Image 1 (tube, rainbow, N blue to C red):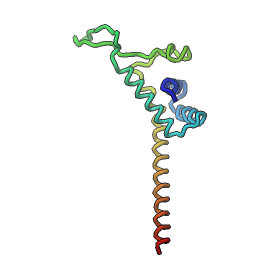
Image 2 (cartoon, rainbow, N blue to C red):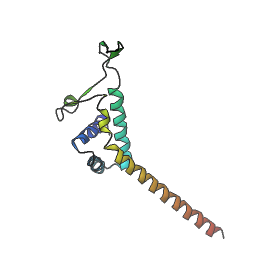
Image 3 (tube, rainbow, N blue to C red):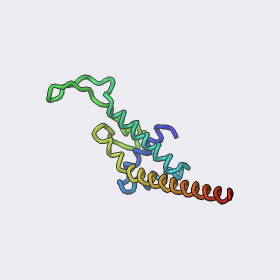
Image 4 (cartoon, helix red, strand yellow):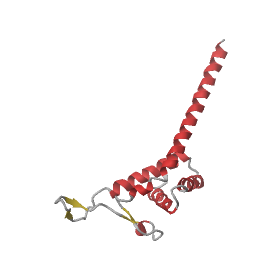
Length: 138
C-alpha cells in the first residue's frame, strides 16, 4: 500500500466517531485483504509520518518572535482540502495531530490480543510436538 493511500485512510477515520473508527479501519483492512496486524502497522506508520511532518519547521517560514522573545519558525501544516482533493476541509497541524490516535488505540489492543493468542497457540503446538517426540522416542 502506498503511503498517501494509508494516510488518507487514517484521515478519513476522522469522519467516524472514536468508537466506530476501529471498525471502519477493520473493514478497510478486510476489503484490501490485509491482516489486522499488517494494516494497523501501516496506519501507525502513516500517523508517525504525519506527526513528524507537522512537528517540523516549515522550510520557507520566516522567523517569528514569541511573547518571551524566543525565535521560532512556523511548523508544517497539512491542508486537508489539497491533500484529499477536496474531500475534506481544515488542516492537521502540531496542535491537533493527536486526534488521529484515539481510533488506533482499540485497534492496537486487538492486535496485541491476537498476537498473544497466536503466541499461546504456538506454544501449545510446540508442547504437543515435544510430547509427540517424547512418545515417539519411547
